[in-house]
Image (cartoon, rainbow, N blue to C red):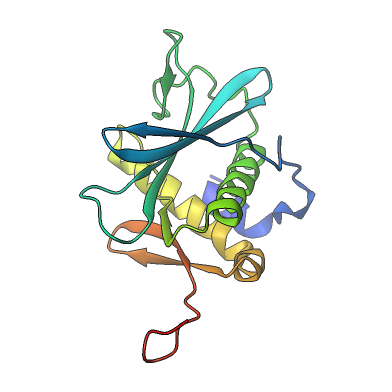
Amino acid sequence: MIKLRNILQEITLGGVQPYATQFAWRRDIVMQQTRYESEFSAEGHNIGLELFPVYPPSDEREYIFQFTAPDAFGSQSYSHVSSAVSGQIPYLRLIATIGEAVLDFCTQYAPDAVNVSGGDADSAMSQKKTRIYAAFLQDNATRLAAARYTHLMRGNHLWIVRKSTADATGVA
């Protein structure tokens, strides 16, 4: 039995072309919180991208990222089980595009941190997604560093964190 984790370790994403590399982010204020949305098309399916502030809000600019795909009822879902596009979109190409989207957002808006943990109604699937995303971030550590970001685990959550230019006194 071939496991996805083993395949990811053997495959480099250098040859995987993302569906998009630039994204038009729409800013919206919902309940006095700024959130951002964008989208792209993958194999004829609309994939939604969302970044919203962590709750409870803090002085730091920390966001939670999620992407959604169409479900069987014509709505958008983040759940693998209810997604109507499972098996129709090459997952590595989708992940490469998601990586481009998060990097594009970080470049444009310079958040302090973005939670990119896998989310799913099935907790085992959430953990699997987080491991895949962590492997992707590790493979792209050089690009993250060039954008002045790194990635780390905080508990069970995977974060992209902006590197500080402050000295020991806190002055940047």
